[in-house]
Length: 480
Image 1 (cartoon, rainbow, N blue to C red):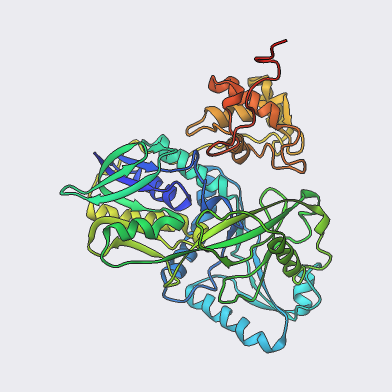
Image 2: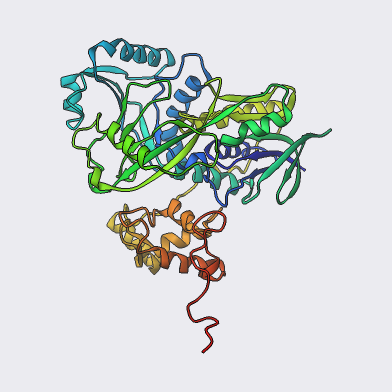
């Protein structure tokens, strides 16, 4: 019997788990993927939104502004990459200036600091490569960028260090109400909990509707992205948006915290909650629309593309709190953009509601800080010397594109909730995220994973399911 079971190890589920880990509660997180951040949270823009475009008075608006304000301090506490680079919303026609002013007014009502509307001259001075077609822009200095993997992993690792149990490759099949709480049926057995947190992304409506008399509906909304090489990452310094539409904030162009340039996403409603394939049409649309914002967009510098799904709920706002007619069942449903930004505030908000239902004392020994994996690519010369002196494997470069060493990879494998797959190493260290996209380093990373995990190399996977690299050895079983 657990006190709380969280369904989903995305950024929302991990933020709630981290907040609950402050208290004397037996908490578990169930995740059907083999690692943290395996669903919606892994494929997004990594943008920390300022909070000007959410409807005033909505839960989105409240949590967006609060989460944005919390992010910098949290990044220092949990040691993950974050940068406050500011954002710009471009207006391409003077007849649309009232819509830009409306965004400004909404931002003011939501409590966003520092908003200003820039003239074309002011805009070009701030961002010389912005399209000449732009006539004005809304400037939000409070906007930022973050690593989605870094944030989610930091929350999860800190939660685990404080006693939260994570069960990966555990798919929830059914939930039933019991006299003491809820019984959760998984493909790995049955678990009981006094309270449940439903942070299941595009599947959140499925679990909500199993226990609540008031039904909800979530539509998976696909977004495709193009990622460009770090050599062009400085083309713009701000996150560049276009005036939003009914489908969201549109295609953006932004630097990433790791120095790349990112363009996307599209916004296409799909029926299949597993539809994360990219399409030639979608990627062409991304680059065409991104080129409206930034002149001379370096199309030939695209090194990879990917797609993710957003959990769009019909009511167009987050659903957070106890489900109707289901005491102790707490939703974190319909968490689409700006969900990544909202995560720190969402975790606190939902944990507070859970503690009102399930009172618990704070732990006197709660560990508030977490240290991330050292980066040899970013370390000073003195720091590099110190790390190599402590462990010579920090001098053995495995990923040349991103300058990732064997010492960093070993840290990724052996830390709390350590990597067990090639993608797990990539998300924690960036080994394989460079221009060659793991073309050179993947065999060595597979070898290191097998050695450190005590497995045969043929057992090492790229990520989930049957994504193994090797099926055997060339000379095995050869007869005559």
